[in-house]
Length: 179
Image (cartoon, rainbow, N blue to C red; front, side):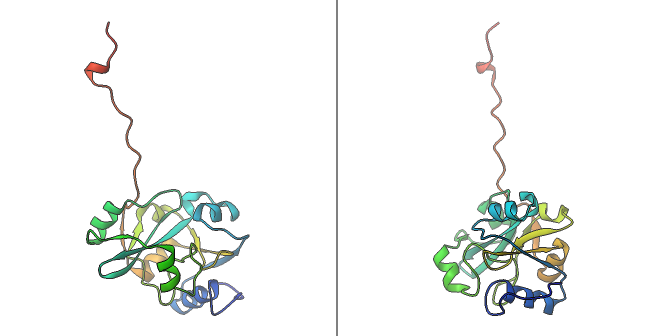
């Protein structure tokens, strides 16, 4: 577990205290400021599929959290089906995130922490990793943890909530060259 906390009122200090109280093993990784999950993955020298990004969603019933690999984009239709959400499910705006969760930097929302709803959906791709790196609550810290600990803590739904590339168009008979 982490030995020291840069701050106990904001960012990584809030998250590490929460994880310690929950009995979750983790490692804090300090890095240069990062403003996206892909940038953080590069700075901490992990492949993007090993970097988890936390997305805050809003539905008519309130806030919901999805965690998926930094290398992928959320498919709202898949998330809606998996969560049993309404057609109003959408990504939260930066302004909404800042107002609802001021103890965390916008763009560095951790997957767990006090005052955050527990993740309701975790993309299945993260479970195939021995560890996942995710935002630590501020732009200068990341957390490395076992994705199974995230499942034990939050008990989220697990499934495929990522966009898929469209398969290449197959030629029909009319498109084939004449012989």
